[in-house]
Image 1: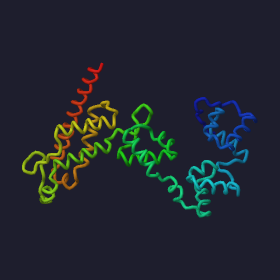
Image 2: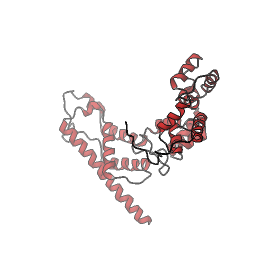
Image 3: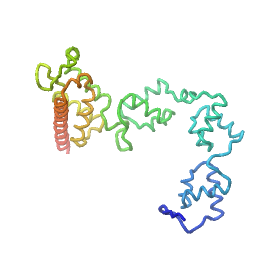
Image 4: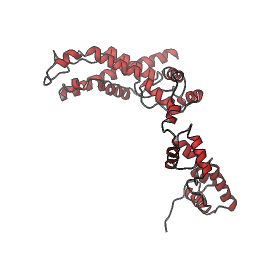
Length: 299
């Protein structure tokens, strides 16, 4: 005999009445509620709902009838396979089979979901100005939120957007394209790629020793990039300075070309990592003091 721990709020010794069983079947057939949602309504375990439905001859999926197949074909003209499967209580594999049997192009839904130039322009504006959230923009333009999110990421080149409606729309905790552009520009300005490429493959570069000393970052540039990251990714509010410096230095070092990085000895690589981290940490601390002073003056 197996023992099961009851879920919170579940009734263990109060069997379902015939009226409740009838209502469970009605809710399931309506397609408005999942089995878990029905179980919560009646304070029973989801397995109890499954047993009630099984006794009534209702399985997980609906029986495919000519009428249901015709409805699936109609919906597949404008909707995706998973969406049609959920609406009609059919398995995704069955819906795909119907789609293939009726010669419906699998790329049809993707073509329908393509964004027009006008919609792309609206999404780009919202993403760059951080004026609205993906869901609201999608609703306004009549497109899927994922389409908006995907294109916004193409525009900003950022990591996962921060969730919630109390943060600036379409912002992430990682440097966005404006910061990445500044980083790559800084590296290009400080590195003479032509001269470095002409160096022997066996020749080792150094961080401090001339004439092959590697200079990639100065204090002013570190301060500029840190301030840009705070403004674009953190609504102008300072995060933890140690964390921010670590994030900025790691991202910055990623953009040093591998062929140049590999010419540094391991000791010099460690020195360069430390040097870049210290410069970003100094910049973050200076920025934190500046923001704190600005807030004190404002108050």
